[in-house]
Each structure stands twice: as structure tokens, then as C-alpha cells.
Picture 1 (cartoon, helix red, strand yellow):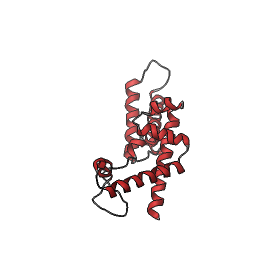
Picture 2 (cartoon, rainbow, N blue to C red):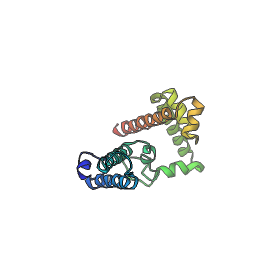
Picture 3 (cartoon, helix red, strand yellow):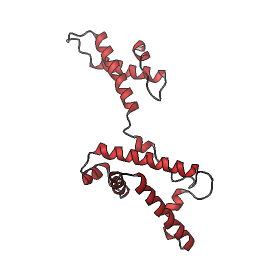
Picture 4 (cartoon, one colour):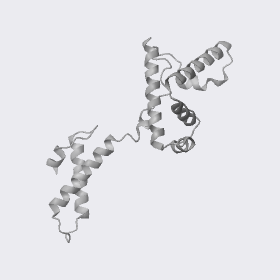
Length: 173
């Protein structure tokens, strides 16, 4: 089992984790082995260990939960350069602001952001973003637009990359 585990690499894990996955495969082999079949226990165990290792590697490299893991913190500073008191959550919560200067600045920022979206996002990406921000699930967005769920997920990933790139450009200038 250790020799099998040596030839595999598990992203984000060390050698002991790979061996542990092999041990899980070995446990499953012990649990499920049927001596009345024609296969020897050794070949059955090797197969179970290999399958467990491959499953672990596929799971580790899967991007299924990347939207959950690549969030934007609402507690971080609104500006990358300064460590001011103004955080994103405060800006989003500040709907009752009565200061005319803040209202004008906020309207200008909103219009600037909207224009930036129009310039960098495709019509499909804009539709996906609009529905997703409205609280629709991936499935609901896909059904509304007549596309697949994977297409919606890909569009949201492209949107995130484009927005992050635009933010980097703004901070670089």
C-alpha cells in the first residue's frame, strides 16, 4: 500500500495524507473482499487502494466549491491602499445616508461600476450577474436564460476574474 501511495500526489496534502487514503482503500478491501470470487485478496486490495487514491485526487482537484472558497470579505478595507475605518459592509449598509456629498459620490461610484461592467462583461455575463445578484440559484439562472448550470458557473467565474482584473487596474493607476 505504501509503494502504491508513493506514486501519487494529493494537492494540498502531505505524504501521510496520501498513505491514509491508501489505508482507507485497504480497509474497504478487507471489508468487501469475497473469497468465493476468483480474484486473490492482493489484487483486489491493490485495485481498492488505487481507486481510493484516484478518487481522493479527483476530489482534491475538483473546483466544485471554489465559489464558496473564493469569497470577498465584507470586513476588509474599502480601499486597498489605506487601512481606514470604512469597510465594504459599512458602504453596503449605508442606505440611509443623508449627506448630499455622500449621495452624489455614491451615485457616481455606482454609475462608474455599472459602466465598467458594461465595458468588460458580455451580454450573457451581464444577464447571469443580474439574476445571480437578484438572489437566483445557479439552477434558476440557467433555466431563466435557457443555458446549462455549468455554463452559468463558468460565466460567474469569468465575471469574478474580470472584476478582479479591473480592480487591480484601478489600484495600479
